[in-house]
Length: 67
Image (spheres, rainbow, N blue to C red):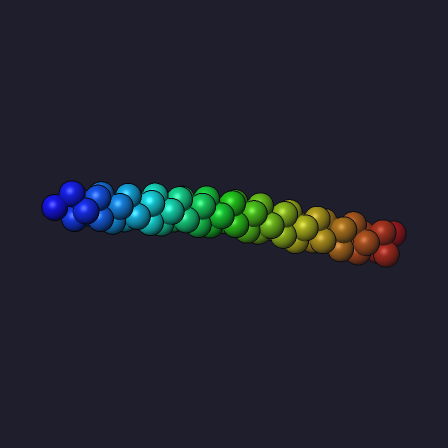
């Protein structure tokens, strides 16, 4: 009987260990997705600014050519 209780206790510890590992992996995955989302948002913002800068430079070049 005591060996069955010992086996059940070991199985419970293994299950808890797997659960903790799984939760840890999920937290790491969500954190990485959040970081990637912020990086993509930053890149899109920079791309928009570069587009505006290109338009300003082209406008200035046209004005310089017309002078």
